[in-house]
Length: 258
Ligand SMILES: C[S@@+](CC[C@H](N)C(=O)[O-])C[C@H]1O[C@@H](n2cnc3c(N)ncnc32)[C@H](O)[C@@H]1O
Image (cartoon, rainbow, N blue to C red; front, top):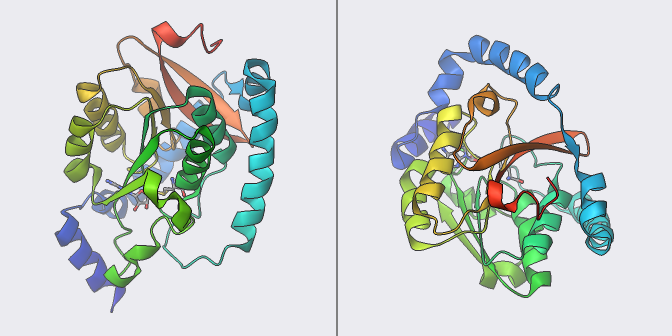
Protein backbone atom coordinates (compact mmCIF):
# COMPACT_ATOMS: atom_id res chain seq x y z
CA UNK A 1 0.00 0.00 0.00
CA UNK A 2 1.15 3.55 -0.70
CA UNK A 3 3.00 4.97 2.38
CA UNK A 4 0.99 8.19 2.49
CA UNK A 5 -2.29 6.27 2.51
CA UNK A 6 -0.98 3.97 5.28
CA UNK A 7 -0.06 7.04 7.37
CA UNK A 8 -3.49 8.62 6.89
CA UNK A 9 -5.35 5.38 7.71
CA UNK A 10 -3.23 4.67 10.82
CA UNK A 11 -3.53 8.28 12.03
CA UNK A 12 -7.31 8.01 11.81
CA UNK A 13 -7.37 4.58 13.47
CA UNK A 14 -5.19 5.68 16.40
CA UNK A 15 -6.45 9.28 16.42
CA UNK A 16 -2.84 10.40 16.50
CA UNK A 17 -1.92 13.51 14.55
CA UNK A 18 0.99 14.90 16.56
CA UNK A 19 3.39 13.92 13.75
CA UNK A 20 1.94 16.89 11.83
CA UNK A 21 3.83 19.20 14.19
CA UNK A 22 7.07 17.70 12.85
CA UNK A 23 5.89 18.19 9.27
CA UNK A 24 4.70 21.80 9.65
CA UNK A 25 7.35 23.05 12.10
CA UNK A 26 10.29 20.99 10.87
CA UNK A 27 12.79 23.89 10.68
CA UNK A 28 11.73 25.36 14.02
CA UNK A 29 11.94 21.96 15.76
CA UNK A 30 15.43 21.37 14.32
CA UNK A 31 16.61 24.74 15.66
CA UNK A 32 15.10 24.12 19.11
CA UNK A 33 16.66 20.63 19.21
CA UNK A 34 20.12 22.07 18.44
CA UNK A 35 19.90 24.58 21.33
CA UNK A 36 18.26 22.09 23.72
CA UNK A 37 20.97 19.48 23.01
CA UNK A 38 23.64 22.10 23.83
CA UNK A 39 21.81 22.86 27.07
CA UNK A 40 21.21 19.24 28.14
CA UNK A 41 24.71 17.99 27.28
CA UNK A 42 26.30 20.84 29.26
CA UNK A 43 24.39 20.13 32.46
CA UNK A 44 26.27 18.45 35.33
CA UNK A 45 25.69 14.72 35.05
CA UNK A 46 26.52 11.44 36.80
CA UNK A 47 28.48 8.77 34.99
CA UNK A 48 26.13 5.79 35.29
CA UNK A 49 28.84 3.12 35.37
CA UNK A 50 30.83 4.83 38.15
CA UNK A 51 27.65 5.33 40.15
CA UNK A 52 26.55 1.72 39.62
CA UNK A 53 29.97 0.38 40.75
CA UNK A 54 29.63 2.33 44.00
CA UNK A 55 26.06 1.17 44.60
CA UNK A 56 26.61 -2.56 43.99
CA UNK A 57 29.78 -3.94 42.40
CA UNK A 58 28.30 -7.43 41.88
CA UNK A 59 25.29 -6.03 40.05
CA UNK A 60 27.61 -3.78 38.04
CA UNK A 61 29.58 -6.87 36.90
CA UNK A 62 26.31 -8.63 36.06
CA UNK A 63 25.21 -5.58 34.02
CA UNK A 64 28.47 -5.71 32.05
CA UNK A 65 27.84 -9.37 31.19
CA UNK A 66 24.31 -8.44 30.10
CA UNK A 67 25.71 -5.67 27.87
CA UNK A 68 28.04 -8.13 26.12
CA UNK A 69 25.15 -10.57 25.65
CA UNK A 70 22.86 -7.77 24.39
CA UNK A 71 25.36 -6.56 21.81
CA UNK A 72 25.80 -10.07 20.45
CA UNK A 73 22.02 -10.69 20.42
CA UNK A 74 21.34 -7.39 18.64
CA UNK A 75 24.13 -7.85 16.09
CA UNK A 76 22.86 -11.28 15.08
CA UNK A 77 19.16 -10.41 15.19
CA UNK A 78 17.34 -10.47 11.86
CA UNK A 79 15.31 -7.24 12.22
CA UNK A 80 12.16 -6.58 10.21
CA UNK A 81 12.11 -2.87 9.37
CA UNK A 82 9.83 -0.88 11.67
CA UNK A 83 10.88 2.62 10.61
CA UNK A 84 12.64 5.22 12.72
CA UNK A 85 15.51 4.71 15.12
CA UNK A 86 16.89 1.27 15.89
CA UNK A 87 16.94 1.54 19.69
CA UNK A 88 18.70 3.05 22.68
CA UNK A 89 22.26 3.01 24.12
CA UNK A 90 21.51 2.82 27.84
CA UNK A 91 20.12 -0.74 27.86
CA UNK A 92 22.69 -1.64 30.54
CA UNK A 93 21.30 1.05 32.86
CA UNK A 94 17.74 -0.22 32.39
CA UNK A 95 18.92 -3.73 33.28
CA UNK A 96 20.90 -2.54 36.32
CA UNK A 97 18.09 -0.39 37.75
CA UNK A 98 15.55 -3.18 37.36
CA UNK A 99 17.84 -5.61 39.17
CA UNK A 100 18.54 -3.03 41.88
CA UNK A 101 14.96 -1.88 42.53
CA UNK A 102 13.27 -5.25 41.91
CA UNK A 103 10.03 -3.58 40.84
CA UNK A 104 6.74 -5.42 41.06
CA UNK A 105 5.46 -3.58 37.98
CA UNK A 106 7.46 -1.64 35.41
CA UNK A 107 5.83 0.68 32.88
CA UNK A 108 7.35 1.64 29.55
CA UNK A 109 6.09 3.75 26.69
CA UNK A 110 7.82 3.37 23.33
CA UNK A 111 8.70 -0.19 22.33
CA UNK A 112 9.65 -0.19 18.62
CA UNK A 113 12.14 -3.06 18.13
CA UNK A 114 12.18 -3.77 21.85
CA UNK A 115 15.69 -2.79 23.01
CA UNK A 116 14.32 -1.39 26.27
CA UNK A 117 11.66 -4.12 26.66
CA UNK A 118 14.29 -6.85 26.23
CA UNK A 119 16.51 -5.20 28.86
CA UNK A 120 13.72 -4.80 31.43
CA UNK A 121 12.44 -8.34 30.82
CA UNK A 122 15.90 -9.92 31.09
CA UNK A 123 16.30 -8.28 34.51
CA UNK A 124 12.75 -9.17 35.60
CA UNK A 125 13.40 -12.80 34.65
CA UNK A 126 16.62 -12.75 36.71
CA UNK A 127 14.71 -11.15 39.64
CA UNK A 128 12.22 -14.00 39.33
CA UNK A 129 9.63 -11.37 40.18
CA UNK A 130 7.69 -8.65 38.45
CA UNK A 131 6.02 -7.73 35.19
CA UNK A 132 6.59 -5.26 32.35
CA UNK A 133 3.63 -3.37 30.93
CA UNK A 134 4.42 -1.57 27.69
CA UNK A 135 2.55 0.80 25.42
CA UNK A 136 3.49 1.64 21.85
CA UNK A 137 1.85 3.47 19.03
CA UNK A 138 2.76 1.50 15.89
CA UNK A 139 4.85 3.70 13.56
CA UNK A 140 2.18 5.28 11.40
CA UNK A 141 3.83 4.30 8.11
CA UNK A 142 3.80 0.59 9.00
CA UNK A 143 0.98 -1.63 7.71
CA UNK A 144 -1.10 -3.69 10.16
CA UNK A 145 0.40 -6.98 8.97
CA UNK A 146 3.75 -5.80 10.39
CA UNK A 147 2.53 -4.65 13.80
CA UNK A 148 3.39 -8.12 15.08
CA UNK A 149 7.06 -7.09 14.83
CA UNK A 150 6.67 -4.40 17.51
CA UNK A 151 8.92 -5.62 20.31
CA UNK A 152 10.38 -8.19 17.92
CA UNK A 153 13.51 -8.66 20.06
CA UNK A 154 11.43 -10.02 22.93
CA UNK A 155 11.57 -13.83 22.79
CA UNK A 156 8.53 -16.04 23.53
CA UNK A 157 10.01 -17.11 26.88
CA UNK A 158 9.31 -13.57 28.19
CA UNK A 159 5.69 -13.38 27.04
CA UNK A 160 4.32 -14.58 30.40
CA UNK A 161 5.89 -11.57 32.19
CA UNK A 162 5.02 -8.98 29.52
CA UNK A 163 1.87 -7.13 28.48
CA UNK A 164 2.00 -5.04 25.31
CA UNK A 165 -0.70 -2.47 24.52
CA UNK A 166 -0.90 -0.89 21.07
CA UNK A 167 -2.18 2.68 20.69
CA UNK A 168 -1.26 6.23 21.60
CA UNK A 169 -0.27 7.05 25.19
CA UNK A 170 -3.19 9.48 25.39
CA UNK A 171 -5.61 6.68 24.52
CA UNK A 172 -4.11 3.87 26.66
CA UNK A 173 -2.11 5.25 29.56
CA UNK A 174 -5.01 6.38 31.71
CA UNK A 175 -6.50 2.90 32.08
CA UNK A 176 -3.06 1.22 32.37
CA UNK A 177 -2.13 3.55 35.26
CA UNK A 178 -5.56 3.25 36.89
CA UNK A 179 -5.27 -0.54 37.00
CA UNK A 180 -1.65 -0.91 38.14
CA UNK A 181 0.86 0.55 40.55
CA UNK A 182 4.37 0.95 39.22
CA UNK A 183 7.75 1.06 40.97
CA UNK A 184 9.69 1.93 37.83
CA UNK A 185 8.77 3.69 34.59
CA UNK A 186 10.55 4.49 31.33
CA UNK A 187 9.18 7.04 28.88
CA UNK A 188 10.57 6.79 25.36
CA UNK A 189 7.55 7.39 23.15
CA UNK A 190 6.27 10.87 22.40
CA UNK A 191 9.09 13.27 21.53
CA UNK A 192 7.04 16.36 22.36
CA UNK A 193 7.19 18.02 25.81
CA UNK A 194 3.41 17.86 26.09
CA UNK A 195 3.47 14.10 25.42
CA UNK A 196 6.19 13.43 28.00
CA UNK A 197 4.35 15.60 30.58
CA UNK A 198 1.17 13.65 29.87
CA UNK A 199 2.96 10.35 30.66
CA UNK A 200 4.48 11.66 33.92
CA UNK A 201 1.27 13.32 35.11
CA UNK A 202 -0.91 10.31 34.31
CA UNK A 203 1.46 7.95 36.12
CA UNK A 204 1.71 10.15 39.23
CA UNK A 205 -2.01 10.88 39.29
CA UNK A 206 -2.88 7.23 39.96
CA UNK A 207 0.26 5.64 41.41
CA UNK A 208 0.03 4.67 45.07
CA UNK A 209 3.82 4.81 45.56
CA UNK A 210 6.55 7.12 44.26
CA UNK A 211 8.10 5.39 41.25
CA UNK A 212 11.52 6.03 39.77
CA UNK A 213 10.95 7.57 36.35
CA UNK A 214 13.46 7.34 33.49
CA UNK A 215 13.05 9.68 30.55
CA UNK A 216 14.73 9.41 27.17
CA UNK A 217 14.93 12.19 24.56
CA UNK A 218 15.41 14.98 27.09
CA UNK A 219 17.51 16.91 24.58
CA UNK A 220 14.80 17.21 21.91
CA UNK A 221 13.47 20.45 23.41
CA UNK A 222 13.54 22.37 26.69
CA UNK A 223 11.28 19.86 28.43
CA UNK A 224 13.97 18.94 31.01
CA UNK A 225 14.83 22.55 31.79
CA UNK A 226 11.20 23.44 32.48
CA UNK A 227 10.30 20.23 34.32
CA UNK A 228 9.32 20.65 37.97
CA UNK A 229 7.68 17.77 39.85
CA UNK A 230 6.83 18.33 43.49
CA UNK A 231 8.92 16.13 45.86
CA UNK A 232 11.06 14.81 42.99
CA UNK A 233 14.69 15.50 42.20
CA UNK A 234 15.95 15.61 38.61
CA UNK A 235 19.18 13.71 37.91
CA UNK A 236 21.00 13.44 34.58
CA UNK A 237 22.86 10.19 33.90
CA UNK A 238 25.29 9.36 31.12
CA UNK A 239 25.95 5.86 29.80
CA UNK A 240 27.82 5.02 26.59
CA UNK A 241 27.87 8.77 25.73
CA UNK A 242 24.06 8.89 25.81
CA UNK A 243 22.35 11.02 28.43
CA UNK A 244 18.97 10.39 29.96
CA UNK A 245 16.97 11.90 32.80
CA UNK A 246 15.83 10.29 36.01
CA UNK A 247 13.18 11.59 38.39
CA UNK A 248 13.67 10.28 41.88
CA UNK A 249 11.50 10.95 44.93
CA UNK A 250 13.23 13.04 47.60
CA UNK A 251 12.77 10.24 50.20
CA UNK A 252 14.83 7.87 48.01
CA UNK A 253 17.75 10.19 47.31
CA UNK A 254 19.96 9.00 50.18
CA UNK A 255 19.23 5.28 49.53
CA UNK A 256 20.49 5.72 45.99
CA UNK A 257 23.41 7.98 46.96
CA UNK A 258 22.14 10.77 44.74
C1 LIG B 1 12.43 5.66 19.97
S1 LIG B 1 11.19 4.49 19.75
C2 LIG B 1 11.27 3.51 21.21
C3 LIG B 1 12.53 2.71 21.29
C4 LIG B 1 12.45 1.62 22.35
N1 LIG B 1 12.30 2.17 23.68
C5 LIG B 1 13.69 0.77 22.28
O1 LIG B 1 14.46 0.77 23.26
O2 LIG B 1 13.90 0.08 21.27
C6 LIG B 1 9.73 5.40 20.02
C7 LIG B 1 8.43 4.60 19.89
O3 LIG B 1 7.38 5.35 20.48
C8 LIG B 1 6.24 5.32 19.63
N2 LIG B 1 5.43 6.53 19.86
C9 LIG B 1 5.61 7.77 19.35
N3 LIG B 1 4.65 8.60 19.78
C10 LIG B 1 3.85 7.89 20.61
C11 LIG B 1 2.67 8.17 21.36
N4 LIG B 1 2.11 9.38 21.34
N5 LIG B 1 2.10 7.18 22.09
C12 LIG B 1 2.68 5.93 22.14
N6 LIG B 1 3.78 5.59 21.43
C13 LIG B 1 4.36 6.55 20.68
C14 LIG B 1 6.84 5.24 18.23
O4 LIG B 1 5.92 4.74 17.29
C15 LIG B 1 8.04 4.30 18.46
O5 LIG B 1 7.64 2.96 18.32
